[in-house]
Amino acid sequence: GALALKGIPEPTPAYRVVGVGTAVSRFEATHKETLLTPLVGRELEIAMLLERWQQARDGEGQVALLSGEPGIGKSRIVRGFIEQTAGERQRRLRFQCSPYHRNSSLYPVIATFIPTPPESEPGLWFIGFSG
Image (cartoon, rainbow, N blue to C red; front, top):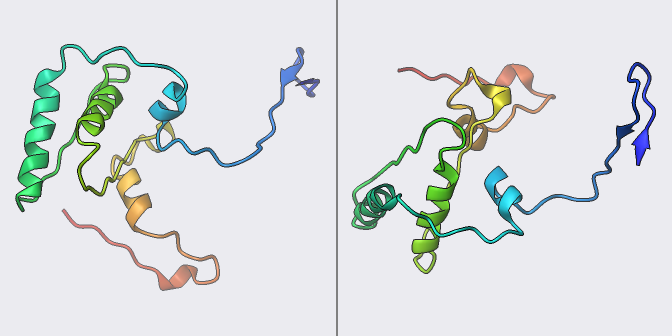
């Protein structure tokens, strides 16, 4: 329900956390219950990802970076690629940027591979990157 909060003239909706979500991305969370329309006009992008996937399967290391302005369909392209490779053995790593870490484009990678130093040992950690 709505709560009366000090300094805010109108009642404000309140929510209760009831558990951990299972969505692996904002896109999945938003579109979990909805049927998506067919992916149209992205054949070149999907083909490029499938080509890189095949090269990786052949033993040639690959990295694909999909970037662009919000709302142009990056997540939808990834979902289309995942659908086309669903029956194949794979290990998937998914990184998404956050508006809270705009000044650190590598934040999703760093947060995944480098653990947060325990509070009991703050001086024992050194993490360095060089370019």
